[in-house]
Amino acid sequence: MGAQRNVVDIDDGLRLVGTAHVSSVSVELVRQQIAEWRPDLVAVELCESRKAALLEPDGLDNEDLLKILNEGRSHMILLQSALAAEQRRMGIASGEKPGAELLAAIEAADEAGVPVELIDRDVVITLRRAWSKMGFREKFRVLDALLWQEDDEEEASIEELLEDSDMLSNLMEEAREVAPAAGSVLIDERDAFLAGRIQQIRGRGKVLAVIGAGHLEGVQDQLSEPAMESASRLKELSEEPGKSIWPKVLMIAIPLFLLGAVAWMGYTGKMDALKQTAAAWLVVNASLTGLGVLLARGHPLSILVGSVASPITSLNPTLAAGWFAGYTQLKVVAPTGRDAQEFLALDSASLFWRNKVGKVLLVTMLGNIGSSIGTWIVSFRHSKPACMWLEKAHLPKGPVRPHRGRTMVNYGFVIDNRKCIGCHACTVACKSEHDVPIGVNRTHVKYIEKGTYPDVTREFSVHRCNHCEDSPCTTICPTTALFTREDGIVDFDDDRCIGCKSCMQACPYDALYIDPNKGTAAKCNYCAHRIEHSYEPSCVVVCPVEAIISGDLDDPNSSISGYLNEHETIVRKPESGAKPNVFYVETSEDSLDPHPDRALR
Image (cartoon, rainbow, N blue to C red; front, side):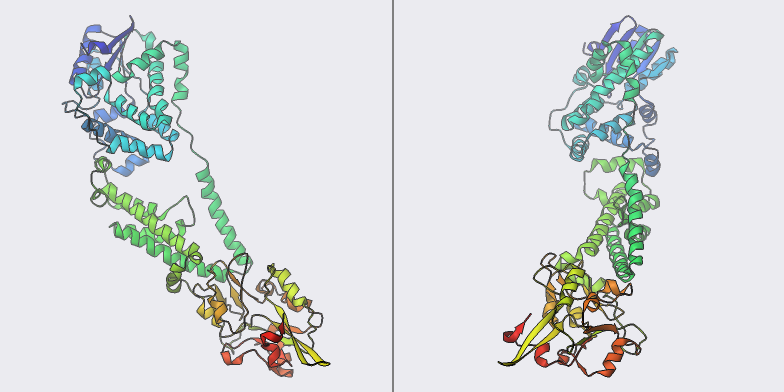
């Protein structure tokens, strides 16, 4: 009785047979209808992909998974796994495989010499269209509902299933419940597509359409629409979702940007900083990526490939080192379709280590995590004091200037206090050149009042970083934000600075301050950006009395060397052992280190 309710005559030339995909009763019903009704054409709710899967049920099991992925058939593995899970949940133990009645329709038609027409939309297109409509959370909920949730309800009988729906439709309905955005694709679009295909072939005599019982009502409703309208939608319903252009744009734009950045650093003379960062990037990324793949128990070749790829792929967000390690694992220890279906059951966490597909995913995941941690450490190390030990272990110090006597540039200053008039031109020029915030200075002039009224004199002294040969600030800096260049300039990288103020404590000359806008240390850097283009520091250029002399201390023919040879000079706090490279002509100890009660800035 129930089976007969699933046979619907639309008219004398069209009969619909609703089936359950795991029912022996449905198989007999299909054979009976073909034998008794004698159709001129049998239309079957199958596409070429599902027909191939039904004819060779073990075809995917022994096939190389990489081949399946390359041919775009990964959705078939997902579908078969979901159908198997649905069959287990419903407690169906029929001797028939899902879709057996559809094969029976084809076989019975062949035996009777009746042509067969496949009328379903390609299942891969259906799944792709549905997938594109879902957000990330919906996708996860769908996979959870179809593959991993257990059903506590009582087992359904074959007869009840036959009267109500077929298993594939049940599966689609479950997906619609957790992902409404994809519901129209999974159910409504397929009803419309089946009806449109039936309308296309109705002129070829008596048509027996064998479809899932769950589609009977929807297809009947669609067949009530004008035939031309139903058939005209087939092209639209067969279109695959378009692919986003942004991944390709990023693939091209990011490498171009990085190459441009490297070229700019080379043009501006910052290759030393680039070399340091590149060395850290290589060591940290490669080490942590290799460690991640090792923890996943990946093949040695996967560890090697992941480590080599990591420093390169970390520069491009559209690539990942774990992908390369996972692909290598996929090639070296190739899983099959059966491995994929077993893994999708996810009945044990150990699958990630003992299943070949799980191993590939774990290698990919842990490789990516290791690479991401490496990228975070190198890129954002200045923001976390906890990473200081890594800085010490992996990040090289800035380039260190050679000792005196080597034929290298060694910059320094001479301040002639006989000439200085305390005009603050050097202070203003420095603030303008470096955009120094209000309230702090890199260069400043100290005033000292000496004597007793009316016999009073005023002395001026220009103070700034002394660019010491043995600079204590570079030694104590935990992140190498302060470093000595090859030309003797003590420079700083505020991207590395963590604002710990260690350098301020170590400096004997009170030459450093905390930038109120950035929260990082700052000081005079000898206008290094000007020096690299053969210009003098801004303070030297603006001094109206030429009281500030700069140049190469190691060049006997330089003006500063001549000045030092002709005049007696002193330095600030020689007892510190820092070996400062700022020399003063005719000044007093009070001027260099004035008592706070007598000091004016």
